[in-house]
Length: 421
Ligand code: GLU
Image (tube, rainbow, N blue to C red; front, side):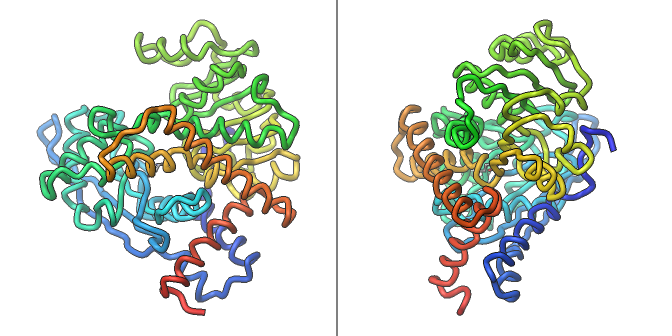
């Protein structure tokens, strides 16, 4: 298997594996584990729209609400051709543990439509978003389930979702987070997942003798998460020595000028591999660039048993959801790589979403500094809780995160009376 292809292990298998190991380590009863691993509700809908070619295109839409013991369901909506029920189910479950690990009062959910936004015009994407909302609005609401952006969706998509929901229920900004600033979005939300990764770097770095300022970083994926992580770490003075996106990969051992790259890609419409101040390399070669921190910020399953040995880093901070298969996790842990897992590392997005929801409910806006400060406080506290537990139990940050998240959900479920014993 080529180094950059994805594993033949699905997101669902990855999340299920980590859950099963954690449940076993916690000594959880089988019947209780069955409740916690299965979804509360899975909605599958038809999204049929007439496109510019005059034909009706039929997509599948999904919303999975995994567990609501700790609060309203929360999680993104993914527009990607590979979206299917099993993937959404896995990602919804991951959200349940994620919101619990960082201690925000939400359950876990995820949604998606199997469309390819790169092949669609903006008005076609808008039709898909509105049609999807029309089909799932009954299970949503600010106290029921609150969608947000994910792969293939952004603030604009959230604006359409909010607007469509508003037609049926009246203006309800708190039904969706990750909205544009002019439509009651929160300052700091767009950058929050990437910023959160860098807060993690600052907390985790000292554990392995890294100081954030000189850290050499490689970033796989240059969407919202990867590009913000790059911009913020570049501002801190970290050399970004490798970057990839769907078009390919680039390397510059002196550090890539991220601001210039951003304007080359977005203002000039350039292609990553044509960027003059870096060398275009084979996508496979990105993993082998010597660095301190490797940040996977693309899709799930990108680091797997056939390419994990290529990585030449001290730390991995998982920006994507489920980027590392269990087999790769084992190889890397054995090689002494310190892995900050998705379920905690990329929680900055949903934490800022929580802040957006709170602001919407209060009809009061915080400034960006307040959002970033509060985000830092939540993520630092989460890292310390998890690191302390990992240290106490001589286990990985991943296991400590899963166990902490699962314990909190179980506790809430028991206290509510959902689960006896
Ligand atoms: N899609 C993001 C995630 O996977 C954010 C979810 C949210 O803000 O609700 O965590």
